[in-house]
Image (cartoon, rainbow, N blue to C red; front, side):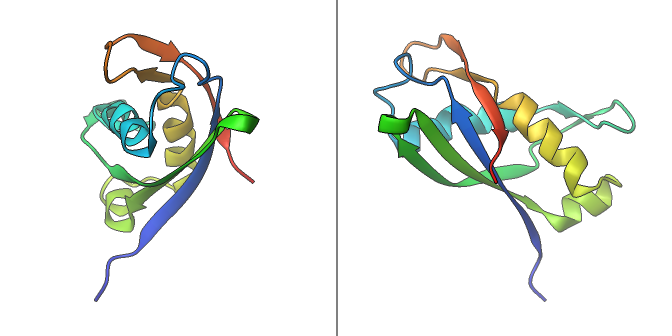
Length: 114
């Protein structure tokens, strides 16, 4: 049986000019560490990595980076969470990204894409 996955599309803005030189892999590298050590919104307990970046589309001329994140359904079941609870956390965690070359944190805006 194949494992189901919840997909979430997030639009990130405010990346340019600070993160202008990043390519899709570097954006992935900047985002994935932000998904570590989150707090369970129900229990407040710390939980480990729960998802991964599956695609990054950079639209520099519009100032938007679209990021698709994937979370395994068994993660949601194991922690008694609903998809909307996790989506809120995903958006919150991506509002600060670490520049992979300098290590500096850059504030960005993130929201669920339509």
